[in-house]
Length: 303
Image 1 (spheres, rainbow, N blue to C red):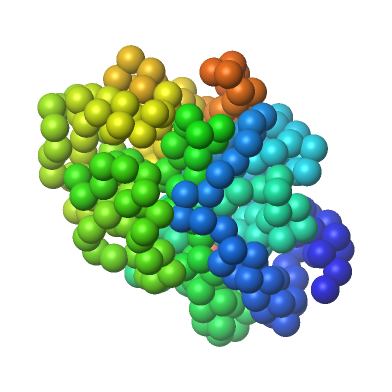
Image 2: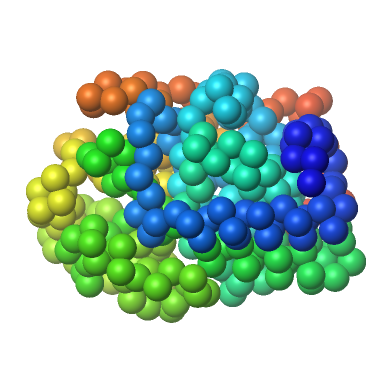
């Protein structure tokens, strides 16, 4: 398998052959299976939020943050759906992961799911580009092996969504059987679906999955687990990032002009260690640098 050649083609948004996708997915599964539910990551590292198939905006991210392996990356999930190029986006990230396993960390988002991707675009895109559902099956099998969280320098917990009322310690996350489709409820579901909110305690999420949690919950969890920050993605932020609860929770959003219409900027979080950090901001790729999708993306369900 010529990974360097595949990466170069994928960087040009060129499709790779089905047998190459098969080999790549098998290698990715083998590698991801060896990683922990809470994968340790050392700083310096750059945290990236949702991408959602916006391939040409992912290229903008790399322009501003540096190419892998020069930059150590941690992507917080939601690589697919809604954007026009979910296939190329996911396969490029997987190829970089396999080629540079210690410089690319990928964790699971709520869209890395068979159920969700059958509704919001990825399934249909795979079928259109490869003529069957086989590539979708290969990719969704990989999703089951993605870590549920990462921890940077033992002080920043990184998840896609948020916390769970069923989880009080990192060790409880480590004990979850993650190699399954995302459940409709329970701790794994909550980690991928929950959101911070201006409430006390726990609340019902308007998303229909996961929970909302308040400052008291986040502070208690961080104190018990000796954390400084809980970093997550999952929510559109017009400015690219948002601090919650006096700096204890951070949302990072990395899909500029989300769904090609929201008008937001995107950000990445560069963590240098010792609580030294910086944000880099970027806008959507110019129209002159974008490929033309075959058809429009599916309608929204929520932002």
